Length: 161
Image 1 (cartoon, helix red, strand yellow):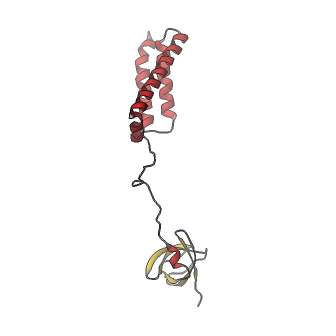
Image 2 (cartoon, rainbow, N blue to C red):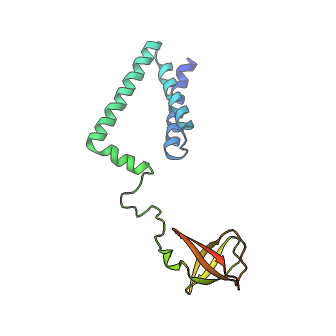
Image 3 (cartoon, rainbow, N blue to C red):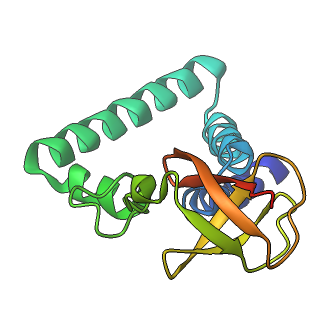
């Protein structure tokens, strides 16, 4: 009698955990526990183990049919796009690295605006840019020369003299 009264609680708790997994706590643990609770509710409701297996088979077939119908009508794709974190087709919302051409600074001279230890800010050709020294500290106000450009990384060295 107690077990039959616990079935609705197990099913509701299982549904809540699965919903938490989908919308709030991704990671697998809450959803797995929710599925186990749902299965336990179905097996407790059954009179025998074989009947529990039958109920689970019918339940899985019903879910498969619903997913198939949703996929054929296009509703599954729309639902998946709404709940997933997939890449956007036009990439308007995604992060794109800056495509600035720093090669024009190669072999140019400038001045360290901040202490470079080893990263900091320098002025090269009248523009403030982030730079990196070869590992040496370069004092603020020192004359520098760009010795390498690696993508968006500008490598400088101190000019002696």
